[in-house]
Image (cartoon, rainbow, N blue to C red; front, top):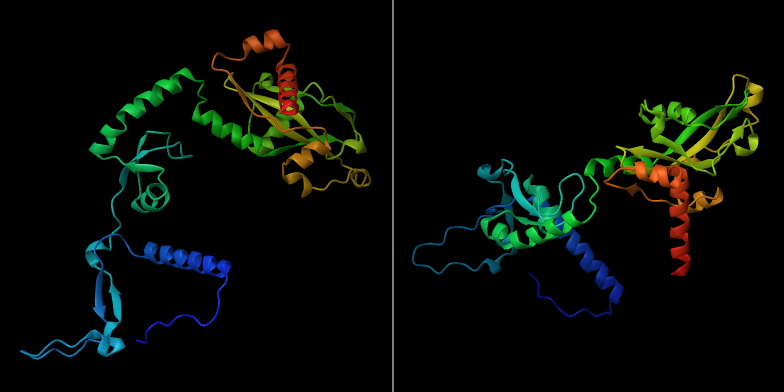
Length: 307
């Protein structure tokens, strides 16, 4: 093996950083291919046995004598059992902070332990984090905590644009019943019309080519405790081919939700509202979900301008 000599040329700092990142990535990839446990190696080229009474030959005499192959040990070929961990933060689809969960050894090692998102649920750690867990749970009880199933459902609803099909041949006015029929395209089967509420501004009539593809705001209430802001899109349909050509729309443009697209139709980003005591008081005091969310939106805009 040749000795290392100083480089004869200057290497940029960026090149060095990129090289270090590449080596780090290669090491991580190599490490993931090797199961945790004892590692067995064998000589690629087995040197001759040293005669009795003679000094052992140095491996540096021949580079091939320093080459080794990794050998898989059958004892460790089986996947390791699941690992019990104590979560140090809320992790989606896994658990909440300070929950004790069982996960595969690979997920525990690469996704949780190394990133310090969890620790082993050992007796020492359970005792060490017991006081912190007690304080955390007491603090959470004093706060309004949204149930996990409602959070998942609201996130799913807000990530989609509801296509609302309307007639291009018969006059219509946008209503909650029309939205209920359209929600089936998202796999939702709503039997109670009272859980869908139109925005006070969204008073649309048709048929009208000028509102083809228009986005509008409406709200869905979940479990009588949460208000989920959603986006609908007007889509005209007709039994006549000549009428269909009057209502062109760009479906690709309407598949995404971003601030630029919302601003085009005079809309803004809104967040869910949750009340553990229910929404009946809001309906009575504010005159409806649409009016309440409109006031909430105005307050948020005023706070944003003050900042």
